[in-house]
Image (tube, rainbow over all chains, first blue to last red; front, side, top):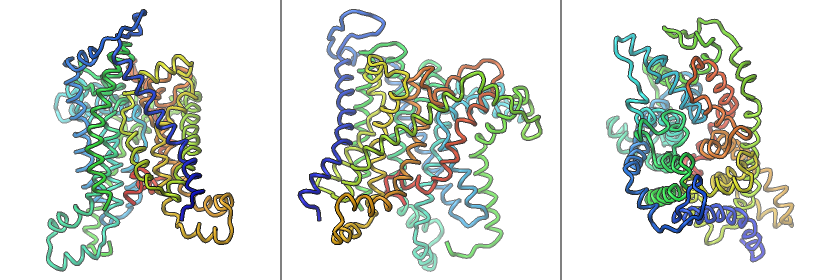
Length: 290
Length: 276
């Protein structure tokens, strides 16, 4: 259908987007790589010497790197676990006949539209605060000691906050997928005597695989770079207890003005994200082709 | 599902679902309620739910003290500006990929998606330094540029999945009738593409409105949108829950309303058409 002429026109129409994205990818990334080999701190004027891989050495051997890497993994997996399991359960519930389904949907989806700084601050102050928070009040009224969420279990608290933001997303997608499930197939299985559990395991779950994959892919992209929630709640602390890779690199770059070290950290983050990306894209590619 | 269920079961499901829905929504409801309390009522023990003295003073104070309108305007300019700019660049690209697909179209699309995988923090330093040296730091135009580039892959993908669904035959029919490329775009394609473009616009305004990495790192007093403005409430200074709530309510209300309207498109848009 496409002629030579329209092909050339098409290329012309695609090129601005491609050129801009290429530029956005290559220029800053090349600069980061270049800086990562320099002894360059904004607080120390003077020549920026080439110091080889020393920035990488310092970054990777710093104990806070190991902590941050571990925290990143726990944060991503924790939120993924809560949101996919919770999302499947909630979607199954919302798919049942009930009164006022539309309103419940609206209530459930709402947290997704709340900006990260707002949700983090609301949770931190009005719920998790050990003196004035609602959780502290409930603890008191049950005769318990209030739990200081953000200083005693900072990472867990951040996981809760982030999971609250992403549970609606998973639920909505899985609910949409459930609603496209062929009810005749279900009825046929029921008539053949399949139990509710085996119907769930052998019909519902396989049907949902593709959407669960999509949920995991999209959430992982966003969860790897959780930042605002940490900044306004714990500042990565106490110590480095809730510092993820994004926050660690941010601290080194914009709080310590260590351009060289921050750049090395940035490149490490990019490499790790790419490993995850390759893995995910394979998985997605397989699941989305069919 | 067309199966019959007993009223008892339907009632149980209803109660359970409403209960869970209420719990999930509660933090937002609590924020809105607290915004109408005095600071004393906001931290009252036991907490007061509805039986307090309703007041608008927090809204007045927040607006007075902190130039709220400036930050609100910044959010509008940044989210709509970056979305419009993104659409201008993405519409031709998505159009071409959907209607004149070449051998490499799929690869280009996958590559664009993969650029989203690059963590922003990997390019934080160069962007920060470039902005500092060119005076773009803490300017709205600077953020518009960055957010356009950040969201471009998503905009292209969303538009592509919408355009893909416009039947190709209709274009062929138009060509047979002697339509030029220009009139083909203007009279055949545009009317069919408008709903998809509108959904993309809506979703990207929401995403840009809530973006909180670049907005926090590249702005200070002048260009800070609401995300960064709210973050300034993170340092505790005495009684401030009611004011925090008022500022938060104003920051999330417009997008919450937009979001509720866009529920349906949200699924399609954010899963790149993989889930409908």
